[in-house]
Image 1 (cartoon, rainbow, N blue to C red):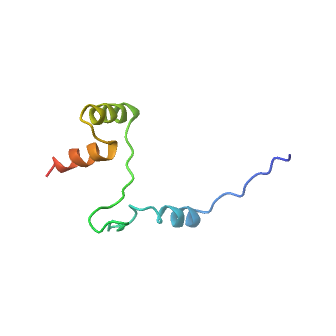
Image 2 (cartoon, rainbow, N blue to C red):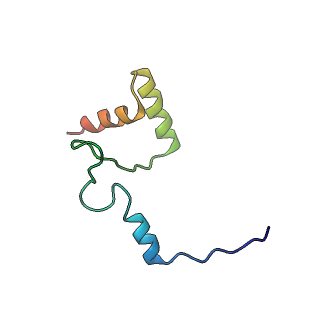
Length: 74
């Protein structure tokens, strides 16, 4: 099997790919629900482990725990 070098991706192609993310742009994209939005979130592994432990202790999913924490901000 030959090793083939891939052509570099242009900046325009990369931007086009990124712009298709569910949370790209100013307005959240409405998915299956009219009241909820899908987002991407990057956190440290330590924070993720703490979130998972808290969620498990409270009988919640990770998503529910994050939504609960965000609801406490406002």
